Length: 235
Image 1 (tube, rainbow, N blue to C red):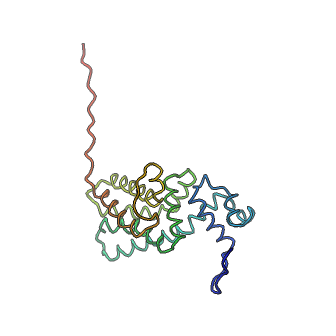
Image 2 (cartoon, one colour):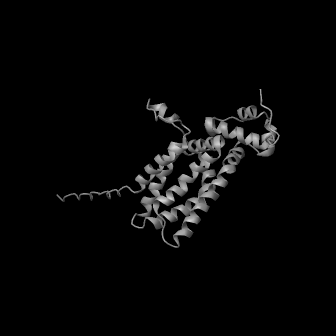
Image 3 (cartoon, one colour):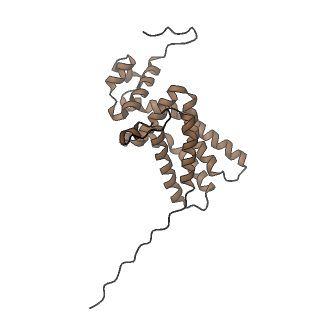
């Protein structure tokens, strides 16, 4: 039985109800596993309503991501702009950049309660099991933000080869995606327990930041030594 709405509350529009439901279903089953039949059934709408508002499954998934990514990307750029203004032309610290990019994601998710945590786990799942379509969507959404942060890291770590910074940022994205996808994946392969609720972002944030910075600051790998090919002796 549904609880009556408070006088100040308004029922969600059909479009928002579809988005909220699709976000939950995509998070639980992934893009490939989610069916339009399940989404429409849970949202209490027919397929024509989804097609009217979004035009199909791909467009619906893109709308689910864009609804929250637009705000996230704007906040990431705002935080980076503010840090660079305060630095007055000097390079930022690597820790500031890492926190501005990854910390902003977790703080915004925590701020938006259950909806933010659902989206956080959707992002984690999307980045750990992307298909070609999803890679294209994420590339479009993150391109400008990633470029800004990459250049900030290049300035912050002038003694680290740029190629190495790109690799390490790649590893940091992977570690974060795995972490925010929840501990369910951990339980699939082991009986280990973290001892904390899956959605405890306040505990996750400092642990993740410490781990990411440790990886970013790790000693550079020794260059691989290639043994020159031996020449055959003339007989």
